[in-house]
Image (cartoon, rainbow, N blue to C red; front, side):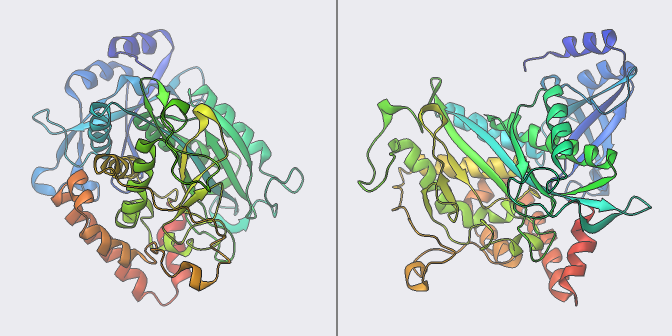
Length: 449
């Protein structure tokens, strides 16, 4: 959407908009917002709206606490669940310093920088997300319980699947907001659901993911339910994954799927990749362990790895759902790679920035794609897997890998990396000290994620 500020102002005037939410994402993936009246919108576009950055963890301290929100007119969305007349709209914002310069810890700005670098190399990164979540019942006070909405399984239908009406409402709401859901279904876990939406450029996809989570939470609450994106909300059930489908376009063509650019990689593979696409995938494989802190940012994230279709090793293959990266069965322009380790607790801007940067580093270094691992890694004999690199097994291990990563330091900066790691070390220490880990997860994550 290429909407201008003047067009947004005209829309607000003509469409009975009474309330405007200015949204942004904090470092840890939570959407924040300030609401303004329509009379303040032009001033917001021109001068920004001030907020207290010292109250947002990881942003600023009390000494220089003022930051400004500048709404991005391209992100205009009507909130369909709000009452009419008297519409409510939402605009995502860029965060700036009082002197007008970009705030160096604005994760949306950090992603924009990587996207610009990608464009200078001649590529557009396209990302589509597949996101899982659980629906829980609430008690008489509206507080979430641990009782799931149903006991359905993968692709079940009503009455085993009691979430189909909720998913339909979510998908229709997303459509009204200009986001295109492609499929939705019951997932493997009891009360677990998945909605997949159409690929877009990296920045729009990150914006859409943030919107998606807010829509799911709002629709669930409106129906007396609680939606959880916690990576592993139930200890003996599948975790929530965020599978990220990625391809690169050049001159309007998908280089993952353009036959004229195929280069045979392995005679035993059923599909080949262009040299550039292979190096892009190789870069992501090589760098995933050191960016895992930002793809799986909670102690609870590491409970998910190694079971129920969540990866444990750094490996790839075609179609194989036990791998970190798989190449789904597709043809032509739909050929892509799928990264299966991330979970929905991510800050999507940081996650997409680091994944894209890792792939671009692979292209710049002309990294070769390692041989595919055509095994079921959940059942493979240890003798077959001992040479594979393991993903981090804990938040502590992920912190150590990120701390020594030149790629992470280059993309997010030394100061932000240092502060982020300090916060995550405190979180890991608190989890390690907890007598009851499940109680810690529920107290720290369940209601927030």
